[in-house]
Length: 115
Length: 116
Image (cartoon, rainbow over all chains, first blue to last red; front, side, top):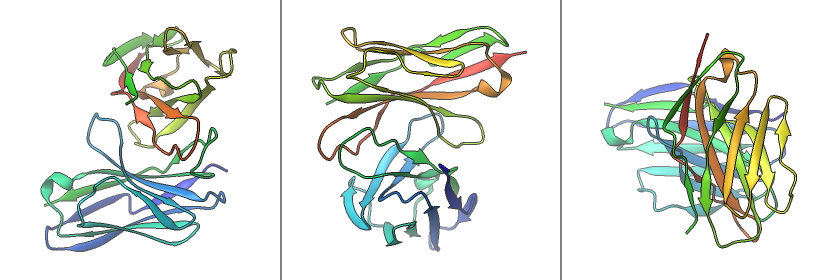
């Protein structure tokens, strides 16, 4: 089973709202990723967690706050977003972070619209 | 820094025919991995095929195969017997093989249309 699930599928929020995106995998993977994807563009890496610890933050603004409560779950907390943050947010996981041909498996994404 | 180039922004193919999507990359590494991902309108990025640079044999997955030319740094994807469900954006991606190499470098994508 190579399934990564994400909720919600769609989210509309105002610039003053606080919301969260959720990602879950039950493949025993120990690395999880958040990507942002604009229309007709490739995904851009935002954050990487390895063994529930934040390993990489690709200089993402603080209005995006990731959290990894356990090895299966990854959240992205959103606060005071801007309209330009509207995008598809993809979660991915892989067996581990370091070395090897660890394939990243992606979830279906959350389409976020910021009004 | 590694770069991945997909020179065909859009391609079209007739159902049941064969199409080849191009990808070239630039790296100074000898150990790396290459991937093709498919992203249909449903949005989910789906792994199509993976190639290890140390393997000379081209990877194959059912109707999907690659032509991996290491010296030329070329990694094209051939789709045989194209089906309507193959219509999607296809991304070529690169990843270094050693150490804490988490980062996938993506090409800009090729939008494939399949005509009935």
